[in-house]
Every structure is written in structure tokens, then in C-alpha cells.
Image 1 (cartoon, rainbow, N blue to C red):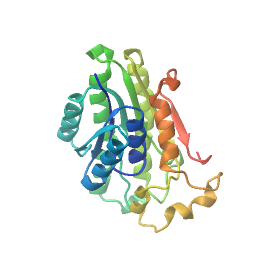
Image 2 (cartoon, rainbow, N blue to C red):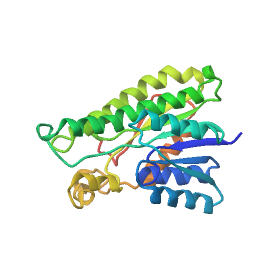
Image 3 (tube, one colour):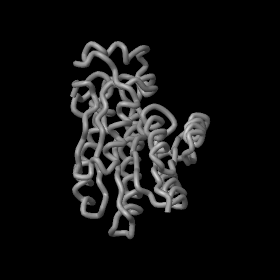
Length: 248
């Protein structure tokens, strides 16, 4: 059977970078996207042009029915061995006392509930307890989870703190079932998500607070994600790896 990898939020940024690397590594890649079909199709085309296999599947990870369909379709392609639990959103920079309930619910639905639902369905397919062959789940945290993002987006930071705790707990919960759960904790990375902050050029403005004095790239984060999904990290469980230029 073919080894399958799902990348949630795989059409842009870090998700795109890791999807391309998974394709080169021989996985059949499921490129999940919420709205940007064109970008997802471009990732699929890049993978197939390089001799790999990939499909684009629409689905909002904050909606359970979409998650169930995503994993059901992926299971038809082969054995799920990797979940890159990457999908997440960021809103405009605000203080908590300026945030609406709708904003909080939407962000928590995508960043927390979505990650939990995807991990749940991955465990059902990967766990030796359920007849699976094992695999790796790599969650996407953020340096905000330890810095708190005061005045910028404490709700985003809190959502990533939840991912940290889930990574540790779930990692220990399913380690004996052939599944390794770990996470990356990116710092300031040059991706489109910063456009959501409402601050033009936010990435460049942050350079002075980064010890290495530059922003990171999506490829640099994706390389660590690939390592966490590989046999090279076979004894790494429930671990959160900072990819932040020394900032966290």
C-alpha cells in the first residue's frame, strides 16, 4: 500500500513547503485547503511535475464533517503514515478587550478544535490498537505560546499553548501504539499569515528582537517537520522543537 501524508493548510506558507518535501520523499500527499483552490492545485502540480503523487482536498478543519471527509478520502489512497497538523489562522493585532466573541470562537475552532479533530482521526487510522501501521503526527505551535503575544493576539498565543499541551499529552498517550506526536514552534517566519496582523511589513519590523537578526523561512520550518516525521527522530516523543532564531 502507498504511504499517505496529509498536510492541513497545505496550499501556502509552511504547509506548502512541507507538502513539497513530502512529495519528494515518496509520499502520496493530500494537500488540504479551506478556500484557495488555485494555490492548492499549484502545490499538487509542483509535486506531480517532480514525479510525485498528490491530490488537493477542500475542507475547513474547524468543521467536523469536513475533517471526517478529509480523512475518509485520504484513507482510500493508502496507509496514512504522516499528519502535518499545520492549519491555523491569525487575526488582526488587537488587545483582548477589543476582541469579539465571534473572533475568539472562530480562531479557537480552527486552531484548537481543528487540530484536535485531525489528530483524533489520524490516531484512528495509524494506531496499532486500531489495526494501523503507526505513523507520525507533527503539530504546528508558535513562539507566541511561550511569549504570550501581549497587545498582538493573546487568543492566538493561547490557542498555540493548547497545541503544546496536546502534543505532550497525546504523545505519551499513543506512543506505545506506533504513533509519535511532536510539534514545531516557529518564531517569525516569512509567510503570508503575517498579512492577517494588519501591520504592513511586520516581519521586517520584528528583525531586531530576533537574536539571529533575521526572519526564518518556511523551508527551514518544513525541514524540522520532516525530521520529526522521519526515522531519524524515532526516539523523540511529545517534544516541541523551537525554530525561532533564538527568540523562544
